[in-house]
Length: 101
Image 1 (cartoon, rainbow, N blue to C red):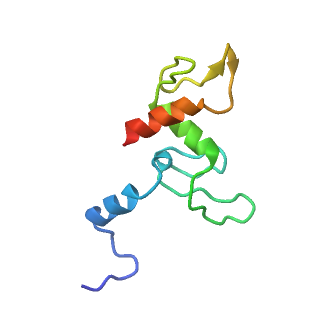
Image 2 (image 1 turned 180 degrees about the horizontal axis):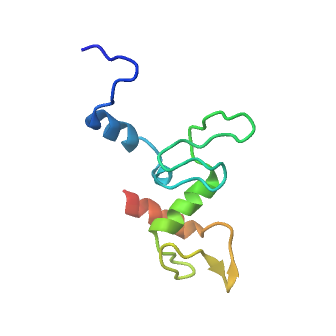
């Protein structure tokens, strides 16, 4: 079978390719603006990155996991004694990874 440029990718192959991606790619990147399921880019050169920006991983963890440290629900930002954090707690990353596995 010959594949031609522009031919649609079979669903089985598309699923396989997405399975190898970091689960944080399921959300958009707040740092570089990459859309969901698209790779992050360097803002200065536009070069594609093999791994998502840390801000994207944090946004993903916030979206799908509760935080064991500050006891917030998914979609609610983490806090330290009432002060907002710019990232999520490390244990929330662990919860998100366990949820995605």
